[in-house]
Length: 273
Ligand SMILES: [Zn+2]
Image (cartoon, rainbow, N blue to C red; front, top):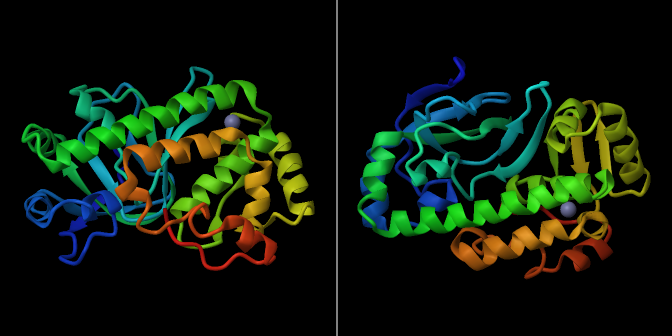
């Protein structure tokens, strides 16, 4: 089921795509694939894929944050992976499954593009650069999901919240972004009161500011220190499997020094993932 508010409005621009996966393709492949793409506005709370429903399109966000979540029968959900401009939503379709096994939703809005599942499969069947990149990205996403299983089962909420904020920070080209406590509790599989308490701990430590539904990352290095190992583990998986999707902006500070940024007190503008 696709959201009614989700609207394919215009062809994507001819310039280099904001989506890093599309931008990483050789020019000839990118040009061919662009003929299958339609621009789309990904709005907050849009459902891109619903678990148990047919997959109609795959989506290439130009920014923002989309979440892959596992919904439970009692209405609760927990996030298993996150997608921004570095990837695509619907990579599981590469496995020839017609039915979504996860629910995909927009958490932070952006523009993007999408292609039909038929066009996606046709491109994959060429076994060219697109196939190579999408399958490596799918493997990285699988690593992301497996790490999330361990994280959600074994790591405390404070560490998981820090990890989530770092992952969102990597994908957004800003230190401040909209975020509700309801969303956070949904993503973390925790209650709102628990999230409120933990967010308060991070705020008092000077790592974040949070007011009126807007989150501000004040001390990224501090958040890295508070996060569990899972943030770095997934980061390593992406750097190994799809380096072209993360190295362009050298986002996390391993290359450009998160600790240095943190020690300066106020991190500089943060490039997207
Ligand atoms: Zn963890």
